Image (cartoon, rainbow, N blue to C red; front, top):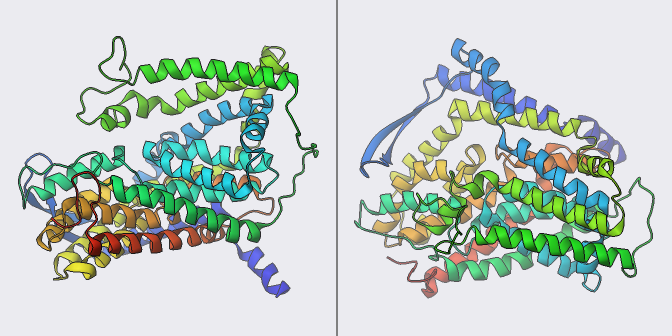
Length: 513
């Protein structure tokens, strides 16, 4: 057994090598598919006209001259424009000053001193699920903070990384109201529904009732997996840093620093919140008024909140760390500020290399259209079936899960699938909202398990940072499988209960059309 373990450790690929290998496989596969003229024609809703049109998906080869040119001319630009990289670097600046000033140690002590470990985990899972409403931005904020929460709580920070990433990813299927992603999905759902029933609309709270149940049950299940499976498996975390005696109570300086930091942060947040409230004097300046729904005004692709949210949070973290440091005298001059700001960026070289390799893999996969080809093929296969009732629900469930592996973008996949799924389910007697619900929740099951998801590399990067012996890509995914399985079971049970009992999905929304 020991020899087998040693052999396994020797052959376990480092994530950097794994992404490079997958990039090579994408190049090779694209050439093979192009050689056989692989293509799929499917029916898609035209966004401008609202009518069906036949769409052809072909594979772009990376083994021909144009493909080779793409590799050499776009690899650098793909890395530079890779959103998770810039977001991570910026947010780590704010986390660095909060960490080094002592603010995080103090605030985590105050929040968790009279709370059990299980309760802390439950609250973290709940926060992560709710935070997924903001979209992909939450990954770069909550994953590093979760690691520090567990570290300062004398627990294994890797458990915090795994559980927070799982909850954030699976939380994309548990939004109590339409998120920015859900709103984009709803636009395609409405267009597809209008083919059967013109004038169809979807409200922001169409899934409220089932989501309230899912959020609570999901938080409990994720907590159970974390405390009973993941935490015991990983065991105690050994730190190289000097062991500090646990706090028993706050000192006078710490209380002063905490009050000063919270006061400054409150003022900052009040100003910001006022500017995202519409129809108030001098307010609402950070909203995109070209959109109709409030969630789109707030989180739409061209909104201030979407483009500047990470910097807004970084400034908040800076204020908290700076004022706490001033109050406790841990910051004495401008040199301390500069040193603290760069604290979380120490030793980040390997992370940047990892992100570079991941960005290249994702860019190449997107260019080849392999994910779109597979999704279109599944949509065409679905259109050739005559399933109704529960078999149709399960088939859509399976198709959505499979398509997520190579095309993780919810919106891009739904743009392909909605023209088939929504009319089929409406013809079978299901509402368009239910069709979107089945697609969203089934997609979220596979979302944390695919390396093609842009923010998966953030998860792997922090696993590498805290795991001294290194964590292979496969091992990182294996930690997430119990979470996906238990949420898969939860959603199947909830969907069947809602279907057979006839409980409303949300406000003025039902399973049956």
